[in-house]
Image 1 (cartoon, one colour):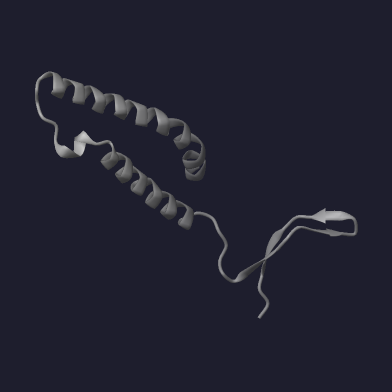
Image 2: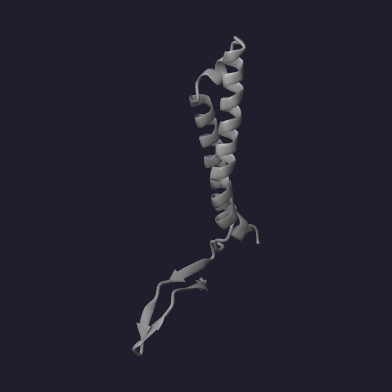
Length: 97
């Protein structure tokens, strides 16, 4: 269930959430400039947000893909092959000592 949620639902929702956040921060910035308030330096440039978000997403994807699925290290992959005119799909088999 978690894998389905992360691979199907999140990619569809993430752009909408990013757009809503962008609208919120843009509105906050416009109100600050209209009132003559000075923005903090980190809000002056979008690069801070982009780099931070990129680093967080890269770290999250490394953790996610590093922990899901996969086989243990004591198995061997046997690729797909033809046997007696029939296609036998690839498989993981235990290594023989």
